[in-house]
Amino acid sequence: MKDKKRVMGRGLGAILSAESKASVNSATDEGADTFVGNIVEVALEDIIPNATQPRTYFDEKSLNELAKSIENLGIIQPITLRKDGDKFEIISGERRFRASKIAGLATIPAYIRLVNDQELLEMALVENIQREDLDAIEVALTYQRLLDEIGMTQENLSQRVGKDRSTITNSIRLLRLSPDVQNAIRSGEITAGHGRAIISLENEELQKVLFDLIIKEKLNVRQTEQASLSLKAPKAPTEKKAKAELSNHYKRYQKTISDILETKVEIKTTGNGKKGKIVLDFKNEDELEYILSHIK
Image (cartoon, rainbow, N blue to C red; front, side):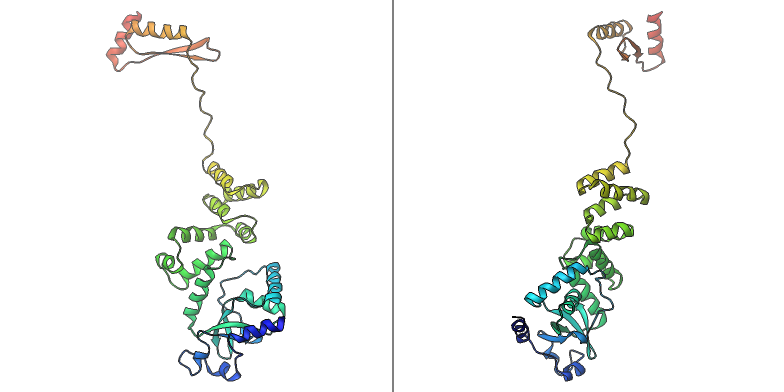
């Protein structure tokens, strides 16, 4: 079954000859059409990692699971390589390349691209963004590199990867998180949603408090957002209790005094309602004199 799979793979392309490996380096070289648009089998020993590889973290367990899948099913999606002399540099597919080595393969199906380094990096990064198995920090790092190393603007980047600018901005903000929080996102201990709630706190000490709370209390994203709001705006001192409803006889006293003094009167009770105070309104000194004359 394994031999059959490899034959099927070779049926899509061809094993590279020693001559083609040495002579074809540019799209204008004779024989370049052997590479462009075709799938060829490349010896793993002829493949070198991309020095500007955007993916920096390869989970060992996940790699072993992929290797087992490759042993059973073969390579379903060819990797993409750049011709570099008689060697081939990985543009995309380093995870598949590593898993293939674990699985014991000698060759791997690949697309060959003949591009310059700038195009190589852009292709690798943009392709990386489309992957479903990237964690949020890797995505953020890739966006940042497209801005810094390719020189894209956020508007260009938005159009290039088909994402809203706000999505890109929120993603890149995750890189401001502490290494501990970033590692927690990468390992799946918390989500990017948790990270966004943490970064909404400007104070690093409060960020750590919230992160520790998430881990300890196993908060979901919604609970984390609420906790973030609480940390940003601590509860104000307890507001005074709503004033007690005046009893009917106090209301009568209030009206009687108001009628006598011909001004607004408010009786406020405290405690058990047996104590209180009378508040008289006046608009100017003349009104105050008028009220005092009635009291006299």
